[in-house]
Image 1: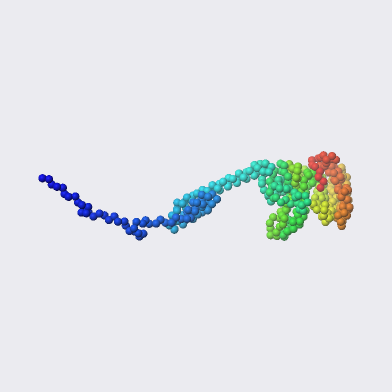
Image 2: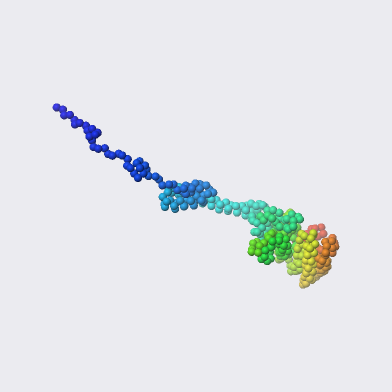
Length: 387
């Protein structure tokens, strides 16, 4: 007899099914909680850090974002970290390139490149120049002919070794007198011109032996009473035939008699070099220069006669030079009182024998100082340049 199996339970008769209805949260059924907002500062930090020129700003914004995010609960900490890292790396790399590039540029300007291609040249301006420096100007060395004031307008220069070709050499510097304001360029030019002359004779006491060079200066166009640059820089220069050695003269190259002679002739030479470009056209400038020439010549004559212990062979030529300077002093003093240009030229006798070059040649020859012979060839160590 077969026992039938028990009946299978129906779904309705089984244990109750679990409750699968979705839970209802505070934001409604089946809605996830919203994420915190993204930090705009963090995003901006990463974006700006990728731009080289704005990387420093990206670095700063990244740091700001990292400080603020913990307090405001916003997202973007990873972006802020990335922006800070990238910005910092870019800034560090740029700084390194600037340092290395600057060092290479300095090496080029001081050792490699330049207007003359010298390894020893140094780029600078007129304001960097000091007494004894030789230099190459970027522009004209002298103002165009006919200019009212002889002043360079381009201040860029290259400072070069004096034992190589160079157009100019600074022979001295000085400050304009007084602490008051000076707005008149003509007044500054006059003070600069007169102030450079004694410095020239300190630098090169025997101006007779200087090569064919001119002398000029750089000076401020106007100065205030409260400070600023009041320095005048004086130099010797040549537009052609560049000197290849320093023009500074060593007093140790002369003996006692020669030094005494050069010292005695300094007042006359300084007066000659004090002639401005206006002497040929302006009566006031011409008469003022004639008065300085008269005073300088008379002083030199007095000092020549006062030299003690000259060798017998030199006394005659030196005395003859002193007499000639005294005679010229009288002519020059008369010319300084002229009322017209025609009268000035007549009194000075411009076309006549108006200087003491012959007597000076004889005196220098007797003292063993360099002179030129009648054909222009040098006798001695230097070249004659009549001041």
